[in-house]
Length: 398
Ligand code: UD1
Ligand code: UDP
Image 1 (cartoon, rainbow, N blue to C red):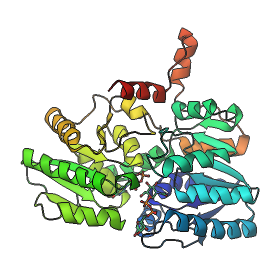
Image 2 (cartoon, protein in one colour):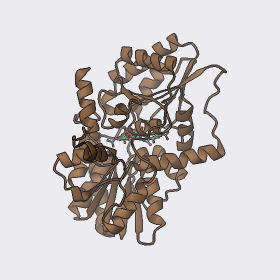
Image 3 (cartoon, helix red, strand yellow):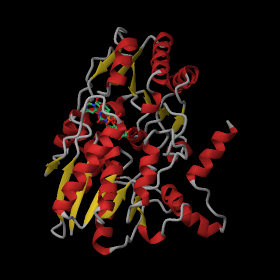
C-alpha cells in the first residue's frame, strides 16, 4: 500500500511522527512523506527530533501568510504532487490548513483520505478559528475517520458518518509524548532558565488567531498581575514565531525580570518544562492533551474547547482570556498545588499509531481505545452522555 503522509505544522509533525515510524517499519507499506512547510523553523525542529525525513517539500510558508494564500498554494502544489505520485491513500492529521487542503487535493484526485484526529468539535466555527471548520471539512471527505476518543467518535456518528469508517484509536500525540518522556527520563533535561530556590514556575503558551489583539493583551495583563501577587513566581513563555504573537509578547512582557520569553523549545525540552511547571496556562490543543498525561492540571485560555475530556476528568479548566478569571484560578492552583491525585490520560494510551496501521492492513480494529462509556451503557442500560454533552451542559450552567 502506497501511503502519502502530509505534514504542515509543528503539532502535525509531532503527531504524525509515531505513525511515520510505524508505517516505515512494516514492509506492507511504501511511504511518501510530504511536508508543505506551512511552518518552517517550528516544523524543522520537530522533524529533526523525531527523525522524520521528508521526500517532498512544497515550501509554501510566507511571513504573515493569509489563510487564502496558504490554501491556494498548498492546494495547487499538492494537486500536482498527487497527480504525479498517485498514492493509494493520503493521511492528514488534525485541523490545520495543510490537513484540510491536502485532503481536498486528494478528493479532487479521487484518492482515499485518512483523517487522524477526526471528530473533535467545539461546535463554534469562530473558536478555534479556522480549525473548527478545517476539521469538519476534512471529515467530510475522509474514508477513514480515526477518532482519538469515544466522544469524538460519537460526534461523528451523530453527524451521520458510517460506523464502519470510524475507529477509536487514542491520539497519536500521546504515542509521541510517551516516546519523549522516555528519552527525558533516560537523558535528563535542564530547564532553559535558572530558577532561584523556593520559586514557582508557570508555563505559558498562547498563539490562537481568535486571541490576536485584545485577547492576547488581556492574557499578558493577567500574567503581570499574577507576578505582582506571587513574588516567588517565574513565567516561561516560548513565543510562537507569528509576528502577531511576537509583537504583543515583547511589548507587554519582555521587560519583567521574572518573565523569560524564549524561542519555541524543542520537544523533549518542552515536555520537561511541562512536567516541572507549577502552573500551565495554554491555548494549545496538544498541550491540553499532554498535561493530564503527565499528571498536571491545565488552565485553558479559551472560551470553549473541542477537547472536553480533560474538563470532564477535572484536570483542565476553561478560563478564556478574562484577566480576572485567569488570575483567580491561577492563584488557586498555585496555592493548592497543580498535581492531580492520579495521572489520567483521557486522550490516548500510546498505541494509537499501532491501531491505525492495523486498520490499514486488515480494515478493522480488534481493541479500540476508551470503550468505558459503552461498557457502562451496556451494564446499566442508560445511554452514556458524551463528554461534549456533559461539558456543554456544565458551561451552560456557569
Ligand atoms: C497553525 C495552525 C494551528 C496550529 C498552529 C500550531 C492553521 C490555520 N493553523 O497556526 O491550528 O495550532 O499552526 O503552531 O493551520 N511562522 C514562522 N515560522 C514558523 C511558523 C510560523 O515565521 O515556523 C509565522 C509566519 O509569519 C506565518 C505565521 O507564523 O505567516 C502564521 O503561521 P500559520 O501556519 O499561518 O498559522 P499558525 O498561527 O502557526
Ligand atoms: N511544543 C513544543 N515546544 C514549544 C511549544 C509547544 O514542543 O515551545 C509542543 C507541545 O508539546 C505540543 C505541540 O507543540 O505537542 C503543540 O503545538 P501548538 O501549540 O503549536 O499547536 P496546537 O496543539 O495548538 O495545534
